[in-house]
Image (cartoon, rainbow, N blue to C red; front, side, top):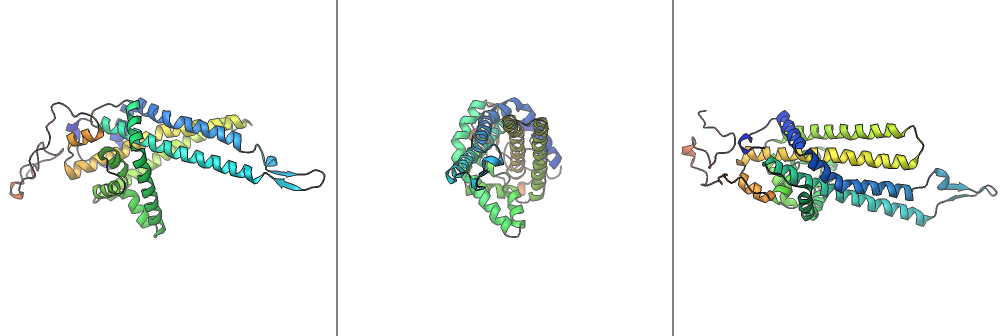
Length: 311
């Protein structure tokens, strides 16, 4: 986005800008997320086909002579459990990498720059450990919040909605990212929560539509292999479409909150993202002026959307 157009956005405008940024880098975003998540979902289909029994008869068997009922060996059960735990862990890591890479691309795009998918993945690998730690802290905090009469969990869900952009774009780690998000959202909780809920509804609809479409295609057949790989394709396609969009919404929210509260220092943020600001960009200079000079901007260049009081 052109720095000159940065200004406070309403709920509808936030989603509109997110869609525009998403469309502008659609090819790069889909490729980046696909490179990460597609192999994991294909691996999941292979694990499902190799570990799960073909039918209930393979799990519980009855001896035709004695009538004795036997089940699969316990070691086989633990093999299946271990395989799916490993698969869940790989899926989780892939989601973290895809999210960080999408934020890198969208954050740079919002500043008018372009990042290739390989560069975004290298950046994501450098932030992986911090993202995992942040997701653990967020999950524990939300769990405790929802256990405490639900409302604290709902509040934290909105207050921490821009924690990942704060980590990716400002390198704020762990509790610092959560605190940074809460301070930015403070005073804007309801609009932020509204945008987050609408984004969640849109991504849920898209994921459900893709799953239902491919599920309907394979419903008329009786081939487990086709069904497993169709499910993998549906999950990969849904992730490739929804992960970048969710990242775009969170990024636009993050920038909007910084525009409103901090004037949004483009040069500092651009360098944190890892891109060079425009050559003619002027960094912020003097500290805020006294209150008696309220008709002057707090720093130069003025914050986006700033107007003198009498205007």
